[in-house]
Amino acid sequence: MTKLRTGWYSQRVRADVGVVRWGEMGTPVLLFPTAGGDAEEIERFHVIDALGPLLEAGRVKIFSCDSVAGQSLFTEEGTPQHRMWIQNQFEQFVYHELVPAIREDCQSQDIGIITAGSSIGAFNALAVLARYPDAFTHAVCLSGTYNLDRFLRAEATEDWHFSSPLHFLPKLEGELLETLRSRFVLLASGEGEAEDIEESWRMAELLGAKGVPNRVDSWGAEWHHDWVTWRKMFPQYLDELA
Image (tube, helix red, strand yellow):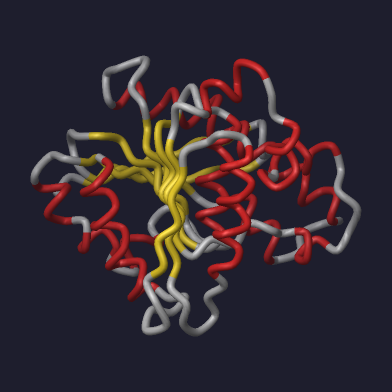
């Protein structure tokens, strides 16, 4: 299986961002790490192994990048206001820098990208799809944590209103919303240890109120907030949507 490591310094987030690609052809999938994970986290936790049949068949090409905003959030870097700024800048990095790089790699300037992630990665997957639906076609959100206000413990800034789907979706209107209504969000969760499927149901209700197609899948109490769950989920849903 072909693997390519790259990355660059981004003025937007004021940091070096690592980017990794697995596979050579197929539907591009941008798979975000959890929390403060790096671009190779999904390989270390054997998600790439689980996706092996889809990669070998040329069905998908997987991309991942360092979770710059997640690292800032969970190490409590700087002030809460700084961490909200980083989240906004990270999403802009994805759209203005990473998406063009993925499209160049795929030799197509208008190819649609599936975005995916688990836990905080699900937050990022949903956020970039909802904010930039011209670039992304589907969001595969597993065991998602969508209300991050409790981690910030501060009043929301303008940066956070731009960044957090819970804040910007209720106010979304116009052409952007019309485009989003042609996309699809998959919200899957177990109901075992450390899972909170109510976060997925609340997000589904918000998406549905705006006319955005979505689905919630419950995997039941035997599936926990853990890589064992996500290694099972990712191949199933990417096989369905890619």
